[in-house]
Image (cartoon, rainbow, N blue to C red; front, side):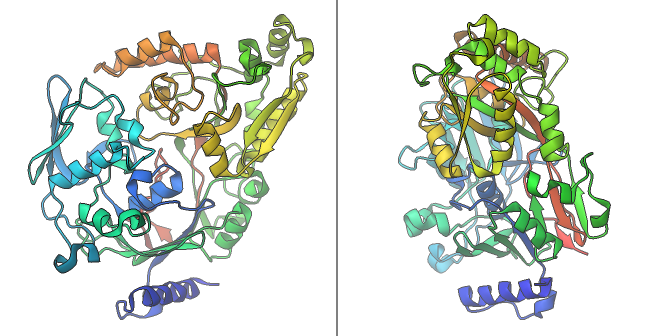
Length: 534
């Protein structure tokens, strides 16, 4: 199906949904069609946990502040802000004349202006236990106990913390912190998940769950002249190979990510676009703040689990050839994680100071032997939990560890099941990744702070020395001193080995050649406000 065919389907959907649409020729519609291999679970910002949810929420909503493509914090709905000298009070001054999308929830008003009390409501909702937002951890232990959020007037919003927390502005760039109107929650109730009302460049039209999401241009968007597109369609083709065939056939405009079944068709072994596709497709690759790893539950391991033994956990790290894994399965998209957990792309990443695990099978054999398990003899089997998208990486690792004498069993489950078992502490050894919520190394180290629940502490790791350093770091305003504390924490993690470090990811974005204005950023956020077609 060509682009015109897609536009006709899109237009028909809009007519069915709304009964009317702008009277213009079908061929002139500029509809950006991208695919996600995972399904959206909610269009409510309070549940913007997964990448596919985050992307959709970003199209529909705005927050106080945002990140540019260089990870600088820039104004969004707040035109300016100040931070008190003690680092505990943040005062934001809002842009005037920003409106929520037209929606029946506003009844006779049709739409309503955004005011500061909307942010009070929206952020209080994140920490409301009745809402049960997976994003509640972002404010956990940080807010003033009496009145953390307030609105002195319609254009001023204030956040008060109980102690200084340097990464707070970064946290506020997260999609969890998007502004919503109370009228929408009162009107839709639990159905707000599928009836979003935001301020973003695109408005909601229809969501056929597991099939497609349709958005249309917000003609009243506060950034005048944007968006350039008339609409956005998200499809949910779960097989990456099928999705890329659709892209090559010009049936969709954009897809992302790699797996071994399609990597060689698209890229050469140096991670560059195959020449045969150069005139039809563009490939964007850059550091992506995502650390891929295998997590080890440090609290609820079975009594006979080899993973209880630090030497075994260290041997797993030494016994994995990450460079070969990347070249074989990902055509060198990504960089082997030979430092700590903080990925390349953040200023606190420093492989010269934080020296992690490199491939050293001899060292792995020594560790097992010194622990009393020569060639793994006497150790119970180890079960690795993964989903189908990462079965190739998990199988590669298992085969290398079997060369050390370890018995590795792979259990493939659905992504939702994997996340639920990680969250409930029922996953002893699991494939996972951590994509930066905000551009600070603290976001990665928070995963191992013992007072944090899962998420983010999926390994249920606890180390008093680590906790003490973490508590000092989050209060430290001097970046150099703070990064030194981060490095000390990284070295503790490397020694304790609650994870097997795999690689620091890179974006792998593929778009048709006629797409312009597509940005590439280290948090892999799909920004469509400036996207257009040639």
